[in-house]
Length: 76
Picture 1 (cartoon, rainbow, N blue to C red):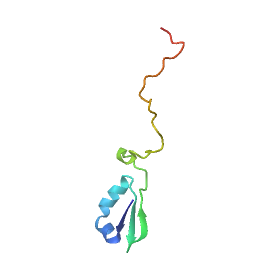
Picture 2 (cartoon, rainbow, N blue to C red):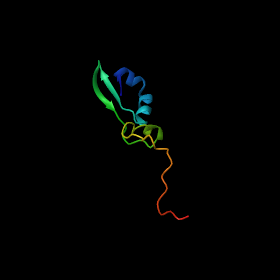
Picture 3 (cartoon, helix red, strand yellow):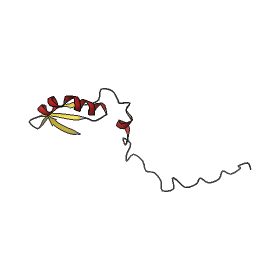
Picture 4 (cartoon, rainbow, N blue to C red):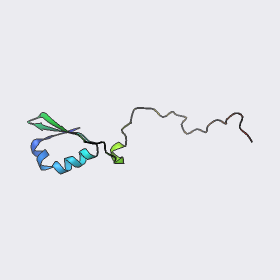
């Protein structure tokens, strides 16, 4: 999460809003003291915003790509 001062926010509002639309949150500060947070109003349907959001929530097992065992009772 990035922090910008009020002057930067006023100067770059369109750019900041584009980033927020993609899911980023931005803090606006006055003399280093946070005073507001820009957050998305709605969850973005943009795929780019959702990539990696579950990182670290699960582990892919080492044998993930190994062939599956044959099912018993399988007809030939």
